[in-house]
Image (cartoon, rainbow, N blue to C red):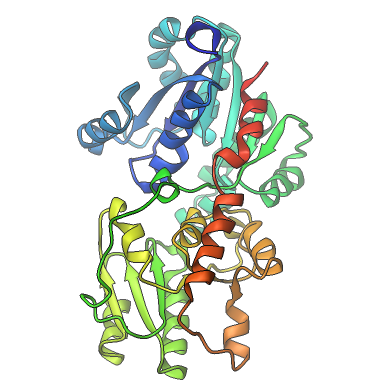
Length: 382
């Protein structure tokens, strides 16, 4: 089913800038919907005013059917004004079957305000626990702002027509905090970027980086919610107790990594590479580590990085209480608990080719968009 017969879909993002996550969770999803005849989507992206020109160029290059608009500085909650800005453009684009797929609470608030005019189905793309994330990591001593965010999140969760949650734990959070009772939701974890799904021929020589021992890789940011301080403390503990491991950090270097490199010369490598190169470097490693503190934000999350580790053949080393991942992967014995490494004499060995193939097969079975095709169809249809 093509063209006018396909469901017309607007995907709305608000405040997000282009990144590997944006490519995987937004652009790859839109391409997947189009290729599989599920919907005919267009992207509207409100991006920060300060980075408007650079984001416009990058996003348009990655997804030509995108409309890039600047946000008003520090006015995320001005939903009526953003709705007015969108109105003329949506008149032209919502001509057939109408649906607005909204990423995050502010995008969903905009979509809900437009629903009476366009009779559009509003689908809330819930990436996490918004109130908890702001309270735990983003702002301090701002009860008024937290109250505003809580109100917007409740509005998005309870007033949208359909909902996508990245974990069952997020559904449980909505139920506990907002009396969520919708039956029109689906759970789709963060799936891998198409770069990780395709056959891969670009290789990096392990000799160039002087990597000889079992390698633990970390690919990600150093923001507070990513518990990077906890991660480096854990890395120091492992490096001190096990002479036969090395760490490969694929992130921007900071003082914590400098300290590790000074304490363990030759055993800690740090590189900052382009998103398209990440997989090449991950494939050099044996294990991929992700540690998160047990906050609400992390308990409902679905880090794409875990799926990318598996797609690269790595065995995840994972802390407890990360969304649905921890329980599922540890139960399947596809991952190693961080607690197990610190409380036992378990040693880490180089991963055999068979183990790497098993890990990749597990990812392709459980964490591709194709796996959740029916869930996407259920969201868009009707």
